[in-house]
Amino acid sequence: MFNRRKSKQRSTQQLDNDDGINKISEIRDLFISFSTSYDFINHQGSYNDVGYWVSYYRSLIDAQELHKSVLSVIPTLEQINLEQLKDSIPIEDTLITSTKTVVEERIMRGHIAIRLDANLDECLLINVVAQHGRQVDKPELEFGIISPQEAFVEDIDINLNLVRKRLPLPSLQVAQLTVGSLSKTKVAVLSIDGIVDKENVETVIQRINELDFDEILDGSHLAQMLYDDTSTLFPLFLYTERPDRIASALAEGKVAMIVDRSSSALIAPTILLEYFITMEDYNMPWVPASAFRLLRIFAVIFSIFATPLYVAVLTYHYELIPKDLLETIVTSRNLIPFQPLIEALFLEISIELLREAAARLPTKVGQTLGIVGGIVIGQAAVVAGLTSNILLIIVALSALASFVTPIYKMGNAIRLLRFPFLVGAQIWGLLGITISAVFLMTHLIKLTSMGHPYLEPIYPFHLKDWKDSFVRLPFNFFKSRPINLRTENTARQPKPKKKIIKKNDFNE
Image: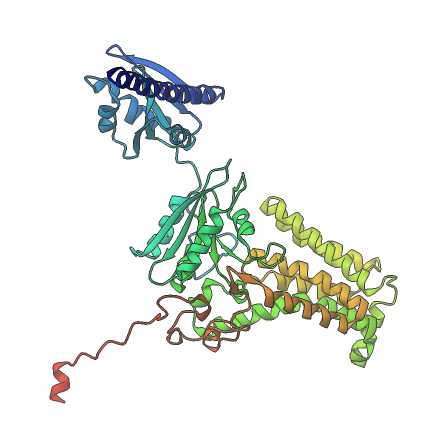
């Protein structure tokens, strides 16, 4: 019996020794693999006959912080050990571990690793990451005149700070996830506990956890993978660079996602009308805010239908043109050898080429190209007899109207929608435009954002949510949150306080 116990103890010790060897070999292999990179530093030093290793990627760390807060502390110690070194270093984010995955992840994010020759399977990890990146600046795509002049940057912690400054609440919950087997991108899911529908938060987190893709470098990548319908032209998550819009959405009961290394954040669920709303609508009186919102919606409708209506009327429905205007149109098209569709496509594609070229060139060159190119090409096309003056005006106004959309991705969808309507107008005239519009409405009715109807409050019809849809009513009408969000706390205005009776009231 004694021999059996002794042999069992020996086998247990042997297993422990094998595990230790495996750990050492894993850590050593990890640092050997790191050393194959040019920018990895594996410095060996010695103090009081104790050998140590300092390992890091010099492209990721702050060299000044390394020398000031880490290397300068080592000579002050009587005896070097990791615990004493950890307590002596004036940096909060430190960790002692022998887990390979933790060591690998932290070193790749700007930590340094200190190991002692006596125990190479244990590392002291210290955060000395270099803080490179843009400072908080003005919004570029959603610029506002009477709105806060702050926009998100590429650092997730700075972006969280911009949101928390606007919502200093302990109930503002942040769940951090990691996506991308190669990019290891951090994603923060924000919501306000007690307001948001927890099912929405759980759905977002579940969909993110189920992602199986190696590289996610931007929020737009993440959004496309989380859409209910990945084949639609329309954005189903609102992509914004404004912290105040994120704060407003969270207060309504929505979920926000901030992706590390992305200068914009995502809002879900969303509805179609939100993409025509700016934050300035809430910073001005409700009458001009409503007027400008209606102007944007009209501009979008005009941008989609103006050119197709021109093609349909000239191809099939001359009788709809007043006699005085008909003579002008006939005169302008007298020498044009093309059908209205070819004429319209020529101008539309020219406008899109100018727009893309101006967007890809440096700012000053792009502005010059957009203005001069539009004037020169338009005038030359009219003189050459390739297009008419009237169509040139219509296409120019349509292009101008498409720019009023506050959200860039919705503007892209509006630009592309004109082309199927043009084809329908050429084939069946007004009937073709009507059929295209029916297909568009059917598609919009079927669309959902995180399971919520995209056309709400139009379909399904919710009268209470019309207070902030086509028009923006005064704030005293905003007594409840949107119905479709199914928030836990629907009230937006606290109960009215009881009137305080003053002494003068008794005298009266």
